[in-house]
Amino acid sequence: MKSITIIGTGYVGLVTGTCFADLGNRVTCLDIDEEKVARLRRGDLPIFEPGLEELVERNVAAGRLSFTASYAEAVPDADFCFIAVPTPSGPEGEADLGYVRAAASALAPHLKDGAIIVNKSTVPIGTADRVDHIVERQLPAERKGISFGVVSNPEFLREGAAVADFMKPDRVVLGAVRRSDAEQVAELYASLKCPVLITDPRTAEMIKYASNAFLATKISFINEVASICERLGADVRLVAEGMGRDARIGRAFLDAGLGWGGSCFPKDVKALTHMAAMSGCHPQLLRTVIEINKDQRLKVIQKLQDALGTLDGQTVALLGLAFKPNTDDLREAPALDIAHLLLSEGVQLRAYDPVAMEGARRVLPDVTFASDAYDCVAGADAAVVITDWNEFKQLDLGRVRRSMARPVLVDGRNIYEPAVARAAGFLYYPIGRGSSEPVK
Ligand SMILES: NC(=O)c1ccc[n+]([C@@H]2O[C@H](COP(=O)([O-])OP(=O)(O)OC[C@H]3O[C@@H](n4cnc5c(N)ncnc54)[C@H](O)[C@@H]3O)[C@@H](O)[C@H]2O)c1
Image 1: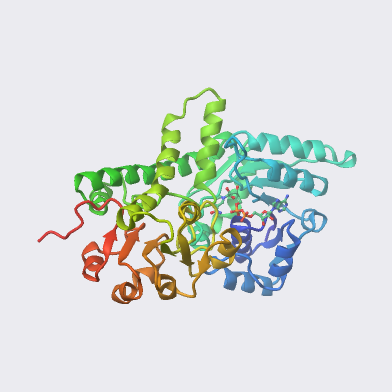
Image 2: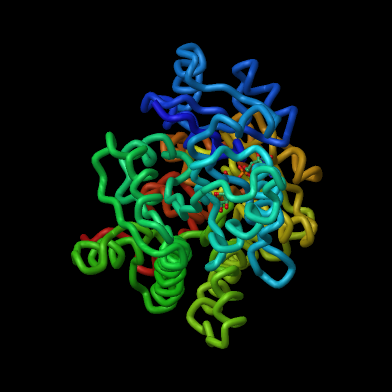
């Protein structure tokens, strides 16, 4: 049993800490947000993540998992201190390292001899060195000379499937100056029996950015193909199917839609672009990937204008708000961009999401929130599918159509069969499905 402290108890920190506790370690999750810590101590999870609540309960009950807001309490006994704090975008698109610096400075005075600091936050290339310097500088005089390691261990979990992703990772990446430090961290993952790649710290940091940038590129690529399909009369869903069967390409991340969002892709692609530009490269592909993504939000507005004419005074129902299903995360969600664009056109907005409405009320004060999908679309001039929650796939389209003022359905996630939606009486606007009638 190892003693682990997780600094930052958000989506990554809480999942990582809870899962390490479940693997038999003694874990303290630390957060500077005292209200969050108080909620966690009451067993009230501040985030929605499938399967996490039971896991937290079980490990707290077993005495392996606890929560604190105190570095003095959490760090002195820790063999490993994982840093899982935010790295948001700064004004020029750079990753803001303020939270990481603050965490490194705060843990240093309490660090025990031989401890390993693990960077789990997504951090710019060179951050492991910076953390090493910060900690070295902040060690109190009487503890100068203690030995500690810094290992870069980027996280690849997906919100909505985070627990499963932690327990069954495709790979664990560990970047370290001393191989033995990486091997100690690898031991923590040993029971998961997954591939472990040990690299230097800069390469590990780059693997995370390159992975996210590649996935975002795949989505922007298929969205550009979708626009071409729409013009030339091809069906992007079948194009993706046909491409995806090629083992060199793969089907994942080839769903045309409203573009990528969430807490990672937008800031990580921007940060990599910024790092590239600052180091004298010309990141033209990455810039275009961002540009295509921005345009994708506008597709909804254009389709609504095609269907309704002027948008001023029309009522539009947004089905889904979270940036993807199975999460309540609204950070950089397409819904927010689309809502702001529609509100600026004078649209009356109604919205419904199965789990993201609490957060949405805070950021979208001018939107009316509905109690379910049917309530959301009642009386609306158009409905727009924003998030592909399963419950929207099961809607009775006839009932939806009958309750709306006008029969306009923009399917931003291609969740319906065009023939079915049209048979229900809708003017149906999917993304990139130019020849969307079945072959006779
Ligand atoms: N969310 C994801 O799906 C995901 C996936 C992979 C990697 N990441 C990366 O992991 C990092 C964390 O992301 P997240 O989504 O978990 O963030 P989050 O905002 O959900 O949680 C971060 C937590 O850190 C706390 N915090 C901030 N400064 C602190 C400090 N000095 N000491 C202690 N706690 C502090 C905050 O109060 C917050 O609770 C980011 O770098 C992100 O890019 C996120």
